[in-house]
Image 1: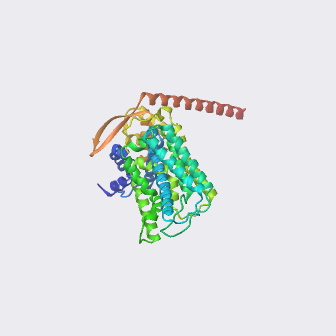
Image 2: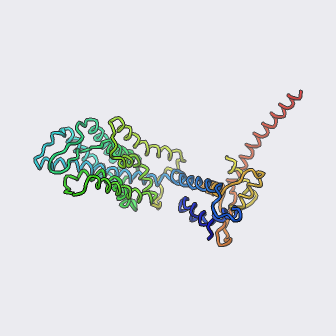
Length: 320
Length: 107
């Protein structure tokens, strides 16, 4: 293999794996036959069409004929991931309140309505997960929207976001509410669009996908349980550690087609997570949350432009 | 139908060809005006194959590398024929209007 062929093969690494398996040798043959004698680097006039061709093929696999089934699976998985994270977050908040009350510490900064809404949020999200496990499509969708309603109400009525007190770091329930609302919205949209929600739990590789995506958003969940930790780590070390975990999990997810689709659906909550120190006012927060829901809806609209036969559930066997 | 697609289907209308053969034929058909690049060609071949307009005819090994031959399918021939009729109708209209214009200018 000469330098030119090696460099062309490096460029062909941009292509989808199945395309490379089928056409790489053939394309190398054409590229070498088209090359001027003595050429050792790829012809610039070949390079741009090669890269744009690769991107076009990736886009066709993502949104073209036959993409509806894999997207349906991704909706199912993203819905479950969103619900699990919301549940863990609110469970952490409720537990923190319980611990605080148990220690006799004041919770005057958290109004009763906030506590009730936290409980409602917990019940709705756990109920939605139960409906997913029982494969109850519409029940899980309705419960998903109940989670959204509770999260939105909690946010709209939120008064004091954080405070500090004895007995460990106190993180107020649902701080960064725009993120939890956007996550709840993505989950609700995903559950509404999923015909068989249990696929989100039973898909081959779902456990793996859950690990990736949970890792991506772990920095948001763990502080809920911080009250139990007696860590010697500084805030900076924690930030660096959580961010590294989140990036690593995202990187792992991006290696799989299902993971990439989940990342796309959860893109905005994920982006918010990576910029978790950003100050978001209430209005901007609503905008973020709405945009989060628009991503899955936009993907659905793109898929709906395919032929109706393409939107039927696929028979399975997709590479995840 | 875009011009590269039209030219690829036209190249295959003469018979099955491999990738480099299609590039050379398209260059010839277009009077050396359209030089398809490998990236463009293979993205187009996959799309045309997905649409059922072309199919793989066979494969041979040359210099240790697989070389596929592509052929025009019946559906591809129909689509090309429809496009030819459409282009011909447009060309006829353009030609007749130009003739009229020239006749008017001469008068």
